[in-house]
Figure 1 (cartoon, helix red, strand yellow):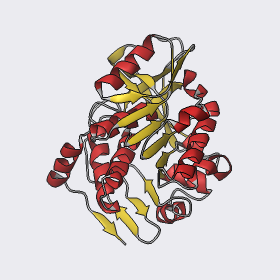
Figure 2: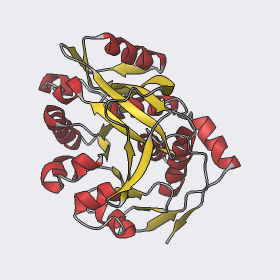
Figure 3: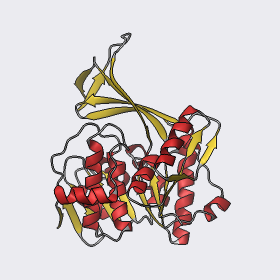
Figure 4: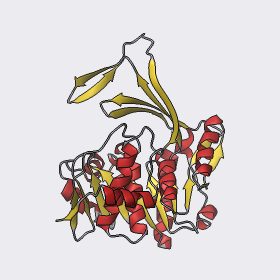
Length: 322
């Protein structure tokens, strides 16, 4: 019996920082620009594995949970790198390996403590699970991260199976999925135990404004037990359907932001699985996210449960019920 099985993408991530780049304002946001025809020197290059499915799986495993990952990998060299990471982190691979290219991302870092991701989904979009295989998945929880096309249809199938069997699950979609709204994502959103999104994702899903964070956290509980809305360095909100909670992030070292959302969700869900209150679970998620923000890569600084609790004792974050 698994404590949790994650369903999401797996990739190889290449983090690139260049010497020559320009950051310029454009239509209310900032763009990173390179001159066409130039050869741009790389200042720093680092490889890791990524993807919401494997990031969350490794995160849950480090928190001490017996974890499996359902995902799709190609028959290529990158598949071996992904598998080696899972094996080292004690995550059981429960997915498929078939012809095609595994997911791959080039992540431009050093952009004012942020990043831009060029991602190739590859075979990640082709995940399929047979009915007979679903019956063999013995788990207490599922965790869904963003997937598209055939893989999204498979997630809906697993969510239906979870609801039928009384298995709890969490969902953390990204913006490009959330903007499709409840018409597309409703089969997963409805009946979730935990819905965790950033302010823009929640606004897209609910067709509201990203400034309505408190209202959107409450609105998410119409579909799931817990609704959580984060907003980077700004205050976030969570609701259990009865009470509303708010937290104000403290100043933290930010090297690069890839994986911060995954790590926050891992901490929150772990806390709930371990019987912590919602406020305590939010604190656990916050500690995990802050740790990941301090290093390049989505997995490098994921915390163990013990280290997360110690970090909270040393650097507490206040979660207030309002």
